[in-house]
Length: 252
Length: 109
Image 1 (tube, chains in turn green, red):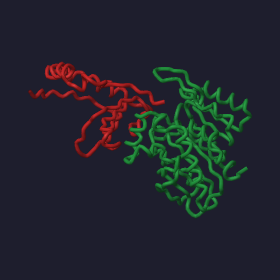
Image 2 (tube, rainbow over the protein chains, first blue to last red):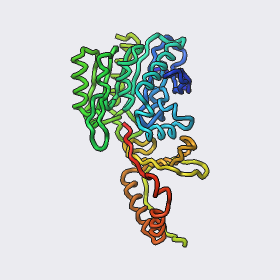
Image 3 (tube, rainbow over the protein chains, first blue to last red):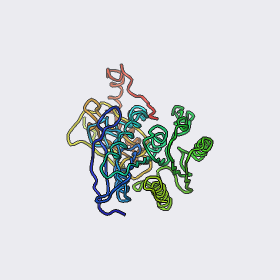
Image 4 (cartoon, chains in turn red, cyan):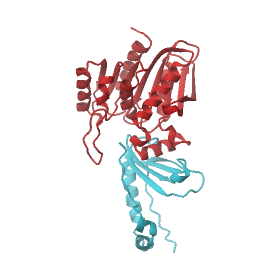
């Protein structure tokens, strides 16, 4: 546990050379440090997402969370997120743009003098799907963590939502270890969809580990909402740091 | 004339607003994850003027039950003779209502 950390907003070069705002935190006085890119959930770069960034710093990672709605600003993050959500996921966070921002965040972290050269990504909710995609499309990363990313597998049209192809079709290009955490009471991804993702990754011979929690639904790490599940979240965070320690810090 | 009739309901939710008056040119309504209100999902109302930037916004997050009661309160307020009269006039003479689609549904995923 690192007690002294520095948290601040930084700018880095993202997709197509755009300068992107990111929330950054890192422990003070230690090096070399692995890097982590945190992909916020759909409500935006909110206080809980910033808590996650600071948590990674206390665990010995230099961390940055790209503000994925940044281009809809300037303004307060909540207003920017509201505009982005109203415009829709495909317009406000298109896959190629997010992947460009992730690659830029990884390059930013690796360029810091204290970097050990390793960078991982973790994402929550929509960010979980983006972390899965980054494991396939951003080969400069070293490890990826998908926390309950929805719409990874193809989705049938239901309740007015159009059908979706998902991103599982990119899985043949997955080039790094993947950790997945899922709640068995989640509706997107539901257990059958997680089964399907497991099946595809197994067939492809990919290096992945999934943990699936009874008594948990979507977003069970989120401490400021009723969906938070203490036991499952504590175990899940242990799994995250075991996985990242192994792949980014060389801990056996 | 002044109606002096207030429909008041107890509420559970959260809001953020602007310090001065702003025009409202559109309203977004969603039932999705709230930012502030302590629910996994909530009724999200954004009163906005997109031409003036993302900060021209009054955002309200309500529990489902509060939102349902709000609908009932609005309907009760709109039952006043003054509102009935205005509604009749606005649906037949307001050029905005007459000539442009005033409601649309978009799916964000």
